[in-house]
Image 1: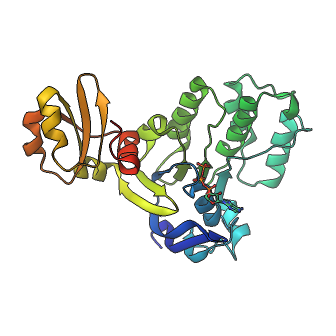
Image 2: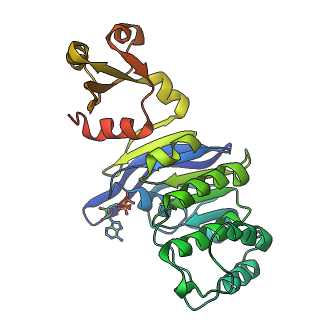
Image 3: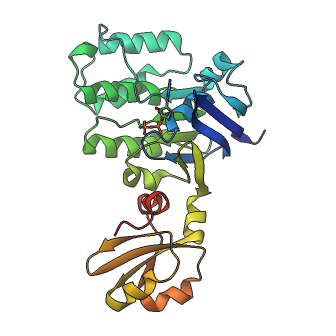
Length: 285
Ligand SMILES: Nc1ncnc2c1ncn2[C@@H]1O[C@H](COP(=O)(O)OP(=O)(O)OP(=O)(O)O)[C@@H](O)[C@H]1O
């Protein structure tokens, strides 16, 4: 199998609610996939299904394994951070590292310590005495010290300050990521991760709304920034969504001839966040 993740017809219902609704997608090796969707879109449920933590209907293969029946083998090569991850509060940080080293054959204690040296977290402190953000820092250091082929991050930077968030993404892409590894990351902080993504998938009400590479976004979508009369003309052309900018409008189109828009203003590729808002909400103005 050439893809690290292969999903066909994945669904998960809770009573009448289709939290994940008949989703197909593949994730090749060396990909950084951003999973983006509003609250309740089904991101966590989808990620938990991939890891065999949630029941589901459909066909799922992760690293060539069935998450339902081969979960133990799968977890040797996959690392997961849940948005609700907890660490044992009574342990000291150093004991958590000892524990991880004891249970995970691919864990590097040296690497975890090196990552924590960049933080205020001291190894002698108990988990319960750390701030919320520091606990997340410990968790991220644990995960990034594991040599895993697939890293699944569900809202990994929740509760972290902006300085640490920036550093985390830099480390993730600079030190951790290479062509042998693959990352799936769900986040609401789309602007902050855009630069590390190779692919995106938008989810809404459990359905896949968009799945494409960053190059495809560039080829398929365009944003026109127009002012005055030109903004009015531009809004008359069928578009995905629009928002206000100083003196005019930023309007996002799909599959349109760029040359026909060029006389009306400045053309650029929309940011993932603006494209997401346009696809979810249409006109914001
Ligand atoms: N165990 C459960 N029992 C019942 N409903 C659930 C359960 N887990 C999730 N849901 C519902 O499934 C839907 C999708 O939830 P999910 O947590 O996957 O969304 P999400 O995209 O991760 O949201 P957020 O961005 O808010 O974390 C929601 O409507 C949620 O209430």
